[in-house]
Length: 165
Image (cartoon, rainbow, N blue to C red; front, side):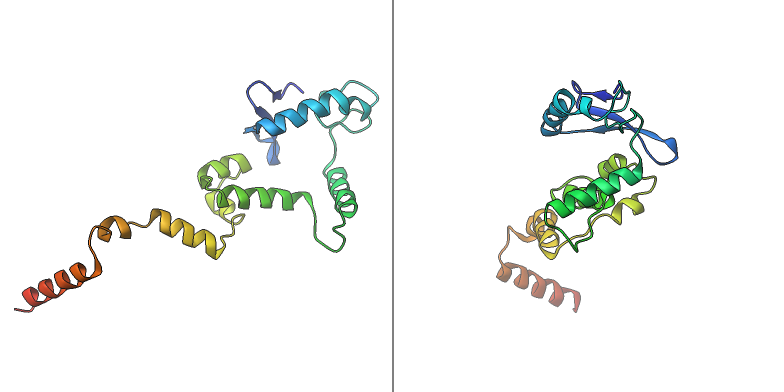
C-alpha cells in the first residue's frame, strides 16, 4: 500500500524483470480505489497486507488468479465465446489512448516498454483515425489554403512556360 499515492494520483508498480515504474491514474480511478479500500479490501484477506490487491492470505495475487477473475467477470457480463483476458485490457487501453490523441512516447512509458516498436504493436488505426489526423496536421491547407485552385493552376502554367523557355 505504500506504493499508492492517492494525493498525487500515482502508483509505483513492479513489472517484468522486477522493473519499477510510476503510473498515473485518473480522478475516477482514485475515487474507486478509495471506495475499494474503505469498503472491500479488508474482506479479501484475514490479516493486514502490504498489497493493494491481496489474496486471502495477504500475499500478492497471482497472475493466474487475475486471469480467472477476468474469465468469471466476462461470463457474468454475458461475453461467452469472446476472448477476454487481462492483456486485452492493456491492449485496449493502449489503442484508446492513441485514438484519443495520446502521445506514443508517453504511452511507451506508461506501458513500461523498452522500445517504441513494442508500443506500436498495441496501436491499431481505423481509417477514420487516419483521416482525422491527416485533416488536422496536413500542411496542405496551410500552404495552399490561401489560394484557390485557378490561382495554383495559373501559377503552375506560368512557371512551366518559364522553365521550358
